[in-house]
Amino acid sequence: MNKAREQPIIIIKKKAHGHGHHGGAWKVAFADFMTAMFAMFLVLWIVGQSSDVKSAIAGYFQDPLGRADEFGSSIMPGEGAQSQSPRIMSPNQVVDLRRDRLRQLAEQIRQQVREVPALAEIAEHVEIEVTEEGLRVQLLEDSSGVFFETGSAAPRTAGAELLKFLGQKLGSLPNAVVIEGHTDSRPYHRADGYSNWELSVDRANAARRIMVEGGLNDAQIQQVRGWADRKLYKPDAPEADANRRVTVMMLLPPATAGDSLAVPLTPGDSGTVHGDSAAAPAAHGTAP
Image (cartoon, rainbow, N blue to C red):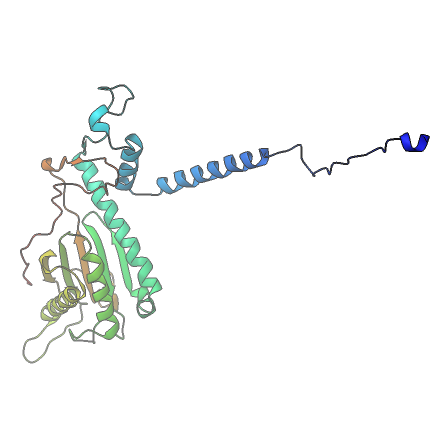
């Protein structure tokens, strides 16, 4: 009787989950960490960009919705700077921006000359630098003739490939281009009177034709010059092979009073200088 009246004791066991006391807090901390890392890499990327890219990014963050012309950059209507108003650049800033573009182009040419198998073999004979005049590329010969046949204006295969490549790259900017031919001081005479002067001019003109074929705008070519041995690469060694060379110069236009230009800071602006006078003249130079 007593046994029938006894109620069974039911014990309910709950399965404990490991680290239950943490909850989802670790997810929040991890999300904060990833956000901080993204912000850091974004800042590092911006620091390494050119001035025109920085200007475009600054314009976006000043006015992400593109409504600065309505309200300005302030949260109060009618106050604050107008982000879409043009930023006036001084002549010196215009020159800096143009030189920065030439530096970027120079680095692209250096890198691709080293990476393209057909050009990597002659990379050591290519000298690239940005000077006060602009971007200068020099093709330096050796005793065997790297770019042109010895004593001739006929280009070798490697020389033609490099000149086509240069034509393509320099054609991406509107700046004027000057092409020069040089020889060493060894006398070069033929029965018909052909000398170092004619050879230097013919090589420069041959380079012009190949670069135009590669993509250089013919209107960009300002002059084609032949200097013979009047401008030696190695003045202390006038008969050195490196004195025989072709020089391609992309000119940096000088700033004038009219170059105090307005650059709009709108989202997606590429930093193009409106009204830039860097466009190449259409006139062709003559070969002396």
